[in-house]
Amino acid sequence: MKEFKYTIKDELGIHARPAGLLVKVAAPFKSTITVDTGAKQADAKKIMAIMGAGAKKGMTVTCRADGPDEAEAIDALKKFFEANL
Image (cartoon, rainbow, N blue to C red):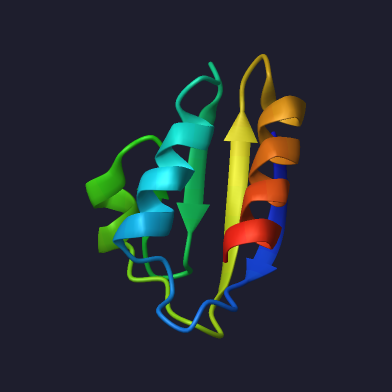
């Protein structure tokens, strides 16, 4: 399992637009990918789960990938979070 932590900088947190983009980044990977806010853990391949996690500006989330392509998934997620959130 690989993981990284990221503090949300977007004023609106993870809202509809970045949640949809996050799902598109996560979907091609075979690994299980989750975003953990501390209060909730969301499947990164399901938009409603990501939006329901309620990640707001200033919150530190932990992204985890577990599976055959976990290293590639974590690299892609890091780039996504840094560019979009």
